[in-house]
Every structure is written in structure tokens, then in C-alpha cells.
Amino acid sequence: MQSATTSIAGKRQAFRRLHEAGCFVLPNPWDVGSARMLQGLGFKALATTSSGFAWSRGRPDNGISRDMALAHLAEMVAATDVPINADFESGFAAVAAGVEQSVRLAVEAGVAGLSIEDSTGQAAAPLFTLDEAVERLRAARRAIDRAGGDTLLVGRAECFLVGRPDLQETIARLQAYAGAGADCLYAPGLRTREEIAAVVAAVAPRPVNLLVGWASDLTVADIAALGVRRISVGGAMARAAWGGFLRAARLIADEGRFDGFADAAPVKTLNEFFTADR
Image (cartoon, rainbow, N blue to C red; front, top):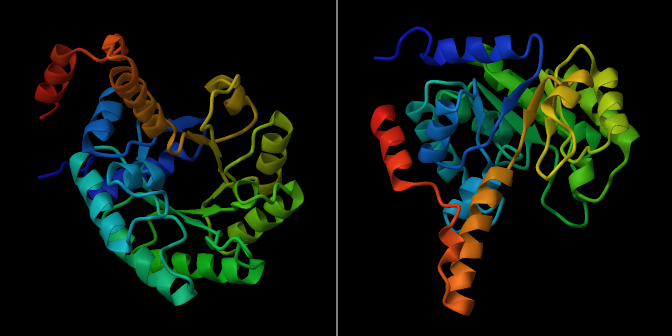
């Protein structure tokens, strides 16, 4: 039986406390093994990655079904003692009523937080209109409130990721999502200190999540000094793992060489960690 600190309620309470002050890193594992390793390294909370999970199932990002996502969330929650934030894409529904149903199911899976994107997946109109996006966030808020209200809701403005890197539009959307009930705001694609600081100031006192999914000269301390409350890495850790895999595999396939294994984690290290983790 889970203790009070690792119960679903305990995880959600701990997750909300992390958002009250300071800055924390919320890395993104893609399976149980990577989640337990990150937990073992001392991270206080984790977030799923839709892309990393999809690639692990041989699918592209946004290529998994709602049922697959929900089963993955339940597995990750059960496998860890820390809060899990769900990368819940656009709620697996085009209309608000569908978002509300999806969010209810995600909450039932035990997540401590979840994000809802405003992207449509349609090249001709990559973002929901602001009115549509707000209604979708309100639907997510209703689902959470009806379940007790302790799951943290993250509103995501995808402008920078869909070819509309307009900072003012991004800020306007995030402010509207805060008004619709989002507890935390997130605009993936921000890179400069000026962009980050502007978003933090515009949505204060709501906490801001920053994505760092590339090699950056910004450190955690730098980002904290800009007022960011939490940092996630999206699919970057999964891509880093795939990068090592592909380098080693291509050396074998193209040159018949095995020196791509030089930086591989030792068997003893992995076996000892996962034996102790059981």
C-alpha cells in the first residue's frame, strides 16, 4: 500500500508545493525504466513526453491514441513515487466536451498535473481560435474541479512551435488561459532571455514552465533568475537516447565497427540500480 507521501493525493499536494516558490526541473522520461532512473537521481517530479512515448512504440509524435496515452499515464504513475505531469497533447479531442471527458480519464489515471495544447494538428489552421482554446481550457478545468480540483492544469500556447512566433499573441493566449483556470502557463519555443522574462512578467503570479529541448547556454540558475518556476525538456532525453543508439547502430551497419559502445552505461551499474529500485 502506498504511504501518505506517495499516495495520489500526496503526490498532487507535493506537486502543488513545488510550484509555490523557487525553480525545479521536471524531466521527461518515456518509459518505466527511464522514469525510475530519473527518480533515483533525485528529481522531485517527472513529466511524460508524448513524442518520446510515441517513438518507443514505433509511432511519430501525435501518433498515439487516447487509450494508449491513458494506459501509459497509469503505468508511469504506478511505477513511481513522485508526481507525474501528463503531456496530454490537445486533449485527444477537437471539441470542448471531448476535452472534458479526456481530462476526467487522465485525472482518474492518477496524474498530478496535465497540460492542454492549443494546436490543432492542421497545417492550414495550426491553432484553435482563442475563443475555442479558452473554452477547451474551461472544459479541462471543469473536469478537474469535479474530481476534487487538486490536479494541476497547465495551459500551453503553441505559437512558436507551429510557425507563428509572435510574442504578443503568445502572451495574450497565456493570459486568457490563466483566466480560464490554468494553474501554470507554458509556451514551448521561447529561447531568449527577453522572451522568457516577458512571459513571466505578463502572467505573474501564475508559475511558468520553460521548455529547454536543445543545447542551451542557459543554466538552471539563469532560468530561475528570470522568474521561471519549472523547467521541462520534452522529448530531448528520448532524442539523446536515440542519438546514442543510432550512432552505435550506424557504425556497425556502415563501417563494421563497435566503438559506438564506448559511452554505454555499464551492465553492473544498471543491474545494481534496478535491483535496488525494486
